[in-house]
Length: 237
Image (tube, rainbow, N blue to C red):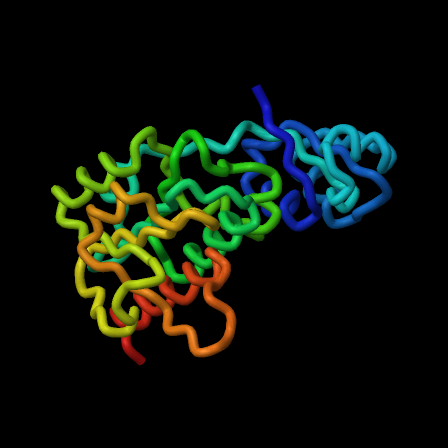
């Protein structure tokens, strides 16, 4: 079983690890992309944009569709065992639905050196072509774990020494926490926020001060601010 991804930058990122690429469908020409395919003996099929629209299910493919092995998730244990820094740093998404949010969060998770992202197997966005495109390649560099029960996953991580930090509207100022511990940052659903059971497992609930007339920020924006805050608190300039 294969998976289709699209977009020129996504295709070029995928070709840096050509083992997963089966073929490339191309409308028009792209000398750099075609040269990469020739180098790795990957088949290029030239076609028209209308055919690519049908193949990709969208007209936002930028003239390139790539057939690859499906993106695979890893066990949560891999995120714990392959810790990148002194303190672990995992982002857990509570039924996030917008693929643009997930893609942006993966991109920031790569930038701050997070150990990985956890999301639910059902009722949440997965590793889709849109996520890959928005992530700008981070879908290949950030390990992701898909789990059945987020609350049980958090309970297991707490037993392994992690502290749970939830982002919600009525928490303490995010700048008052030092984050000098293994951290799981919980980002809630775009509309409902963090579920009650998951919030009860949080050791800290933090919020972003809002001085304007807007009541809340986009999930990926909030996640980005908090991820950089955690990185900064651990490695002050």
